Amino acid sequence: MKISANQIRPGNVIEHNGKLWGVLKIQIIQPGKGGAFIQVEMRDVFTGTKTNERWRTQDTVEKAQVEEIECTFLFADGDALTFMNSENYEQFTMPRDMVGDQAQFLQDGMAVTVETIDGAPVSVALPQTVVMTIVEADPVVKGQTASSSYKPAVLENGARVMVPPHVAAGTRIVVNTADATYVERAKD
Image (cartoon, rainbow, N blue to C red; front, side, top):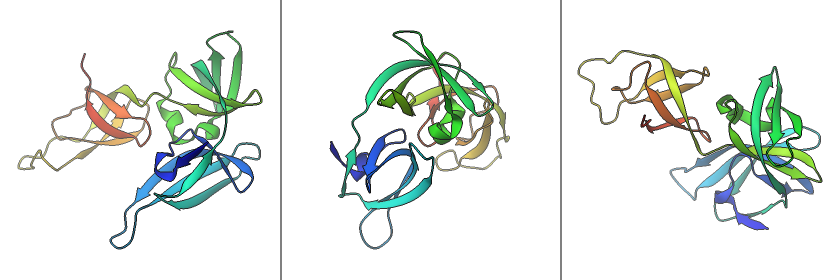
């Protein structure tokens, strides 16, 4: 199935140069002159080789035909992530680098979608957002405007995000799993 390059998301599996690639990261770059393009970090689903590729936003790419399985993330053991198929309760493991940077947002018991090709898991799609607690945040500096200034904060999983100045340690926030950005305060 052909999709536009600007529809590529982390966790997708695409066909490129006769191989299957799992998308780890995307970055949309808009240069001052010329059209926007997409920088995609990919991993070969069979060999594990990583590469970067650039496409213009209007280019099309071939999205691989995969079978989606609803699963539950159970636990991480070093670099191995253990999942359970929600239909037949079979457990399987995947290497952490197959999930990419999003692996830091996996929480025990989280519902995820695992994509498989010929029964072998090739990628994991997390929910678009997760709720996490801030464990460390810089104090507010008087005189800073709240409109455009953000400060660094550390989440319970060790990830760093930029948050508005009014957000303090102990606050639960909603984080976008695709790019590790602050969305809003969590509604308790």
